[in-house]
Length: 290
Image (tube, rainbow, N blue to C red; front, side):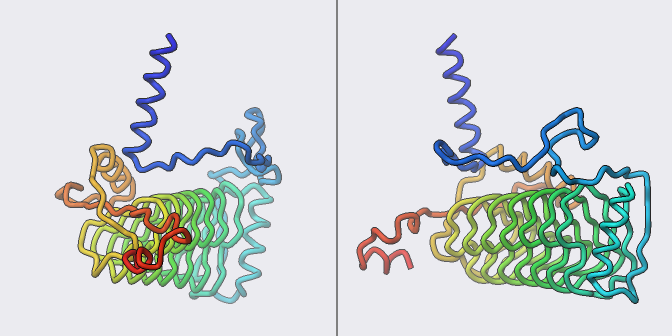
C-alpha cells in the first residue's frame, strides 16, 4: 500500500510540473486565518468574515453620470448591505477608481468605460465591463473574474494574485507586471515588457506582444499565439505539453476566445532561472545573463 501511495504522489508531482506549477515548500511559515470556513454559514464558507449575504437574483442600478467615484463606490456597498447581488453601473464616464476594494460575492455589470485603477483590490466579484479601461485595471486582484469587452491600458493586472482577468481587445505595456498568481488573458496584442518580473500564474496572449516579453520573470508561464517583438532577460521558450494545450483550450473556450484553428499554434515562455541566484554570479556571468 505504501508503494501505491508513493506512486500516486509521484504522479501528482509530475503532473504539477508539466502544468508549470511551483513546488515551493511552505514548511515553517506562519498561517493566519483570513476566511470564514464555516460551511453552514450563508456564504457557504471561504468568505471573508464581514462579507455581505447577497442574492444574485436581486438587482439594482446606479446612474453614475453625475456621481463622483467615491459616491459610486459607497452606493455599491450600501446595495450589497441590502442584499443586492447583481448591480449595474450605468454611464461611469471613464471615472478613476470605480469598483475598487470589493471583498464580496457580487455580479457587477459596468455599462461604459473606466479610467485609471478600475476594479482594483477585488476579492470575489464577477465583473463585466462593456467599454474600455485605463491604466492598472484589477491591480492586486485576489479572486473572481473581470471581463473587458474592448481595450485596456498599461499595467493591466499589476501584481494580480488570483482569479481570471480577461480583455477581448488589445492592452498596453507592462501587462501583468509583478504578477503573483491567477490568470490574465489578452484576446488581441499586448505592449512592451509584458510579464515583467512575473512570479507566479499564467498569462495568455492570443496575438502578438511588444519588446521584452517576460523580462526578468522569476516563475510562471506565458502562452502566446502570435509573435513577440523580442524576449526579455531570462525569458526562454518552453516545451508545450498536452496539459498546456488542454488547459488553454478549456480556458479560452470559457470566454469565447478559442481560435477556430484551436491552440496548436500557441507557444510557451518560462523563466530561464538564471536570475534566481543573481547575487552569487561572477561579473562575467552577470554580463552573459543581461
